[in-house]
Length: 353
Ligand code: BGC
Image (tube, rainbow, N blue to C red; front, top):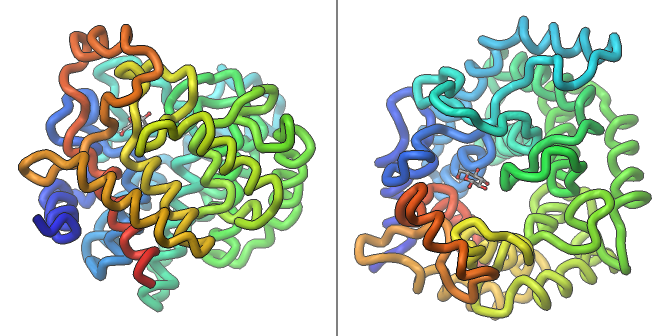
């Protein structure tokens, strides 16, 4: 099967008329559009030349933010006045495909990384297509960056929607990457905040010679790969980054794929397709193409007969006892998962360009 073309088709088939990308069409809990997932999907569409698709997503995302400008303004004022975080309104991490806040069930909505990722993907869209962006998109980007600038040092749920009382290095890196990208979009100088985030990560986020999952954690999380690729807070070849990757390889990659973190129990804590792609992306950026290609083959081996890539595969499970309870609760592992396909496409592109 041509997995590359299949991935493009699956993504395009699952883009809603509104421009939103559903996280997974066959997994009821994921019938929403997450800023995090969808920004990677849009980036992958830019890489493969499906610019109209990424353009429709960015228009959707900008309208989500622009419809909430009064709320963002209220939040900025309350934070400036020292209001406790529990009392303020926040941008949700996911929206219905029509662009409404999802209210059917409780959701851990205070997550900042997806908005940083969106700003990064938006700037990539501009640069790759050599275009200037509509003024209302820039307005949304500036509001998003202002929101991130006042909230970056607040604990929030991480990219796995867990540990709300922690400050997560992946989240900080995504905010950093997003603010840096936004400087290029709106020309507003954010150097002070960028410097503060970077020193905070280096001063507080290092344990035993490598970066930590969150401030105070003694272990790694595979999402730490984002510190260098793509958010560029740390150089690929910085000794701390290299030590972090070694640690990820050692404790999170016993099989062919990559676990999120060693005590993850979601569906037993299997090997995540998109994390295989992220590790491969780091390898591709550092000239380790053979290792990157091995991950491409592993990802392709996880596809089903329809070419659908799952969120994770139940191999080398951290804790097999948790597999069945999640099956009973939410059904079979999300397949296809759009950002698994997106990150597979990104890895392909990165190996070949
Ligand atoms: C993952 C998130 C993801 C969401 C939708 C969650 O289980 O932890 O990273 O954004 O699913 O795909």
